[in-house]
Length: 67
Image (cartoon, rainbow, N blue to C red):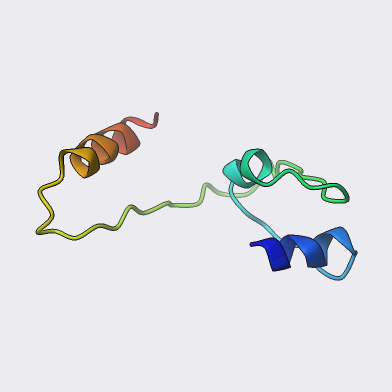
């Protein structure tokens, strides 16, 4: 991510990412714009099926609720 954003900040690249990128990676020289006419992008949560972790179960539940 850092290399990609460095290329963007120096005018050598452009790209699309989720809205979360703007919050998690603010950078001088990088402007984030919402593309209003683009279809939504699916986001998937992957985890080990055999992992009984309560934390993973809670996170998956929150992700399904859109929180």
